[in-house]
Length: 309
Length: 287
Image 1: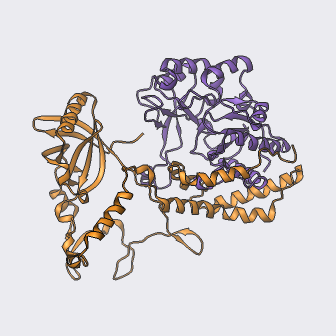
Image 2: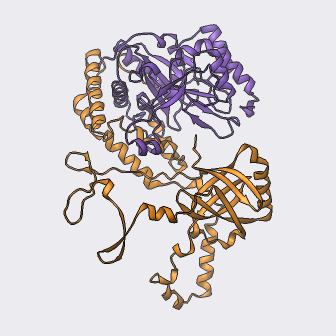
Image 3: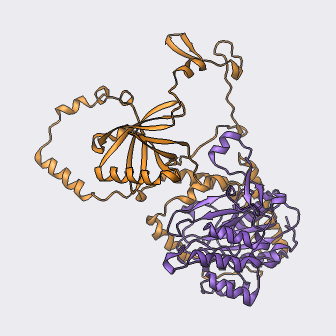
């Protein structure tokens, strides 16, 4: 069950609505560990003193801010603590704005806001009123030690909160090389019409299920194949297809030994494939592969028993 | 209404679990059960519940089992599993309680709570990649059965209640998760060699169209498999149903194998518990 990462209250005028916050997205990037390519051992990081090369104990590490080359101001945890925003337990709605006015570049992480049992009524009321009004709420919220600007909008009877970038965190397009030259480009009416026709031909409703991270799927597939690679070779040499008892035992022994070897070679030492495959199982179905799938099924023999049966 | 398509109510779910308790409990008691709940019925959202709810009745016992493998717990404890208290389902009343929580699906690990390091069975989860069906699973299961026969190992089959078929080899003797995983993967490879076009041991969906995936990884410590007699959250209340090898053979010939809650209650009256031996039959892995 998903776990709430924050709890507090939406504060809106004199009204206070206790809510819990749940992440609304869970990114699924494939994570790699760094290994020593010579013996596949994990690579460990050490913090060392840049001048002496000696390892620095964790307790001796302090934060420094470089004010000019090789000159630092040391900032202690206490310094930061005195500045940190007060651990407020509220999402303070400060104003309501039109959603169109917010450029998507401002949006960061998405969260669901879930009302506490006793606050359902006021939550539903706020959600409904906002849905009818059509504007989104801007709010201030403190999560961990950072104060965020956030946008709260109703979707399908629920409130969703997006933390936002501050305006000085958004990069100004004027500073990006190559944009200025666009001012000199001229297009003809015929070209414009053709481009519009092309857009029209590709127009459709937004259906996010159509898209999947094919690179991630390929990486997972590659991991699977590589984790089985040793097995495939070991088998070709050692195991035999004959299924009389003695040969079956020999084949089984070879297969099990190969399985064991593959597992012990796996960095986690756990059953290889169990971890990387989890997200793959969840991957959306690929309609495009159906044709290939049908072909494979035709090739499969309708019924074939082992010879020893 | 938990199965709105066929008007199967929570009352009927509770009735099913209370009547199936006598044959189901031997297979789930003493294990760290994972509940999968559909509070708003099978058309709504579901969630897995490993940690036994705090609001459980005092008479529902718990047992510490494998920690969950979420990134959160991995970060905190590096590679050490953090302990989780799971529900144990030891008596009919507990099954009624979980049914009342809309825990339609009950998932069981291969080991008992008292000895988490020792699985009592090996499971081969045969999962058909579209467009393959349970018919192809039954065909492969028969091949697997003849190999297991040759190794003098008794095996038992049940439908997954979803698309596939599971073959269990009871051990009830000292073994390890690694040995069971290796055995299952080894068998999977032999099966694949006999039928390279029809079998895969690779979990990636892309490798599976039209093939039967022999999921050997469910023998690992932190994995669970749908329990015998558990309902599934499909449009109709299908059940993970123990079946005879004759039925598997009929299925391999083209007869679909699928049973709903009411079918299963009738089968139990007529056939008893086809899975009964798995709870105590003692066998040893040959390698």
